[in-house]
Length: 310
Image (cartoon, rainbow, N blue to C red; front, side, top):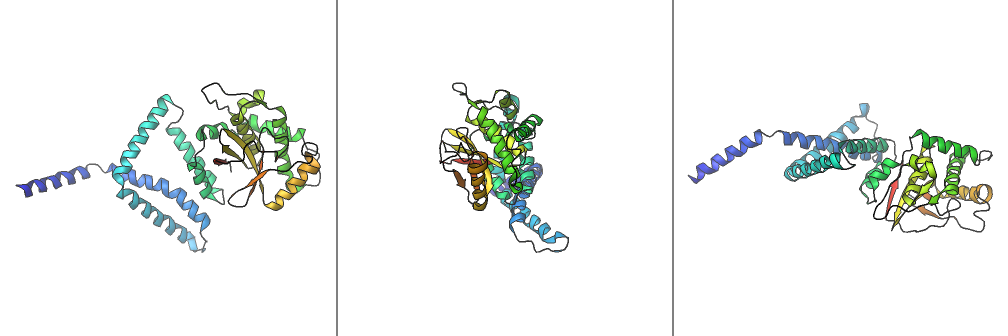
């Protein structure tokens, strides 16, 4: 009798599994979504043996997909439960909040596009995982492709340092410094509402050049990115400020000369240039709203998180 019950139980279990092929499809679909960014990271970091028809990369993709698929399938029960909870959160966000299914789709597409054009695509994944306050809202607010933002940046390059000659290799950096000068010379610090954190979009801040450190950083990053510069936002305790990628230490020497002897002579007289060096030995120059020249004093040097716009 007990043996019969066990047999019936296994038959019922087998029938139930046959009736829910959707879990296998979900796991496979999720495996594809995870495999694509991991493949991009491996593709960019592994030596290319130059096999015919890129067979090595095809094999690499298949191997990564198989590993990810079996790993997820082994944990399919937990994965399905977590996905169900995530979908409930997205449904709630779609109805009552600012984060919806479209937001996830746009973020994923944006991540893949950025990774594909980045020599260090793993940095994009790390940046997505690092804690950064209001990250998604800030990324949406950095409207570097907004015509109003780009037109403002272009105006700044025609207003400042337009006639600087002899530094063609650093033309883009000089133009980004012109954007810095225009924004910081006009910025008026205004607090957010009490018990609230208002994130102004870049084009909103263009109306009055006023807001808190978040708003300043968003506008600076958007304007610099709109003309080809590479900005990042630094999160410190109670503060966010922008930086710009300079490059190597040799590039820093040239930037230092431009700032102190050509572009910001009076503002930087007898003062030092403040910067950070990241894990790849790339130099980032401070562009905080408190600075009167690029590389001005830090309001806070502690780095709790970084958000880079490549």
